[in-house]
Length: 285
Image: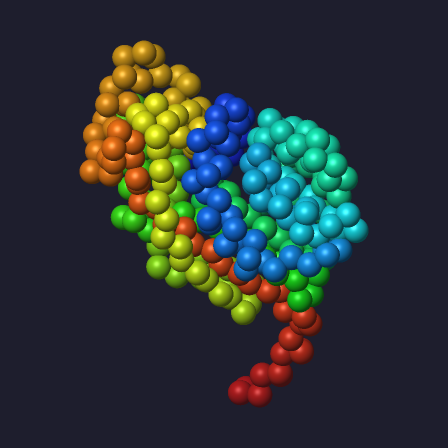
């Protein structure tokens, strides 16, 4: 998919998903987000950037961790997500939070402006993840740390058939490289290609619990990455897609609901405290 089109699909898709996202995903994602924050080890007064902030499920805990003397800037490609975070920060009295709409590959802040950059379940949607990670590195002070959370191996995510089911009904792939960063050491390798060092990765196996068919369908279609494509389906197309998706997760049916397996990967990297010395002259000639 063309990068500009991919950004547009994600921007307006997440605008549509914003009202359903937290209802269907907050509890499901909490263990992975808690692991991200544990590995970040945020300290009072730190300056934190939360990229692809969504509805603030990481932003607000990060703000509480750094305290009123710290600073958390939340960014997202979706204007609606940014509005939600800003409103919630005000409602919770978290004056240390600012929320702005930005592209993960061109965030526009000053070099070295942050102690920590976080990105929870956003890097899979970026057309060039290494470019985004280079931007994260640029924004870190020397010794600062970047952390990203992505979904893991496709074979370990029982809901993964949502993509081919939707792709079969639209003109272009919705998320063509969604699971690429979760395969093997791909996320750590991307960090290293971006110049981040001392990488550490952890995998987390989890179970996504859905109360009934409606809950499972809401998470998959209305509250997730296929929301924009789904909004264009007519009633017949929706019914067919719903049936196919429920059949794909039928092996995980439990007492009227579903317990669907999922896997996450979190990687942490550091910006070198000082640059390497000048290159040695070539004496081979």
